[in-house]
Image (cartoon, rainbow, N blue to C red; front, side, top):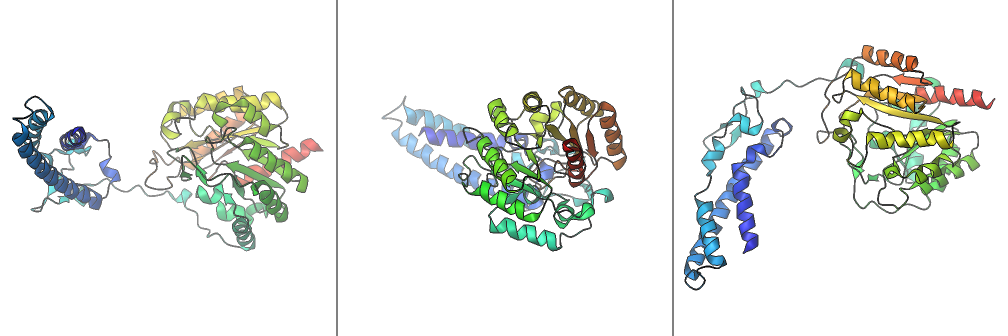
Length: 420
């Protein structure tokens, strides 16, 4: 009986407050809204019928249990039946649905929702400078894709839908194929609002053969610089740090000439796990702050914080000052210039060497919207700011990503010069 009371109470509350549920109307198709309205009409009718039947049964039992659950449910049923009707919902104002004042709700004779298409906000087209014209192809591209499938490996290039995949895998400007290998599967335990990688509370167990397979595949490609990254694995006691370290050691054994960059998560702030990876023989330690401090809780998973990310990068420099540290910032998610400058200053304060800045691109309609398409001139401005602040290298451009081919080429040259 208690379950039924809760169900009917929720149904009544839902009808009364449907406009305040927080579902943005602009993110919902007309067909979707029609589905909701028609479905709720059926729910209302069915629940009312059930409520009336239960009310009648309750009246029959009221004499034997005047003060018990039957009496209480009778009163509840009467309140439900006399509650908000479908007409009240249909006649709701546009503000109840989060619409603009000039975008009123309209229903036809069958109570089917209609929206005046001419009053909808215009679609924001992708600027020319963000349109990639190259279709991924070529010998290198095909070879890398074949090897990845053969060894059951994943790349962030594919999972994150990187716009530079054709250039990096195909050889591009420097005629060197590059792919960013994603370790520990393709299911992440976190759910950042910008990321298209799949999310799961219980990802598949680690593949014990993955470190060997990754090292073997990469050593075959004849690369001189490789990036290893991973999903977040908060389900593992060490966050997968030992898996990371083992892969790096095997790769260095098979191809000692290859420069290795690792883009890791924050390991939930466990600095022992950070130390394990930083001491495994890699050449560049990368960890992304992703956005400015004020937007971190909105953009990233709640378990990731701006200060926690800074602690990771700072700790790497403390235990191994010779390691190059690197991070990345997305622009166009609602940040201000002052916030970006503050973030860059905070990075330099802990001696981060390299920073990349790129445009946030919405991977699907389920992810957060693009707040602004930042113009190339503004990216040039941030590149100059980075140089003035003293970063070893600043890669700033609309299509720049954390694993940015030109940046890896430049950093690789710096590392080789240091060794000489």
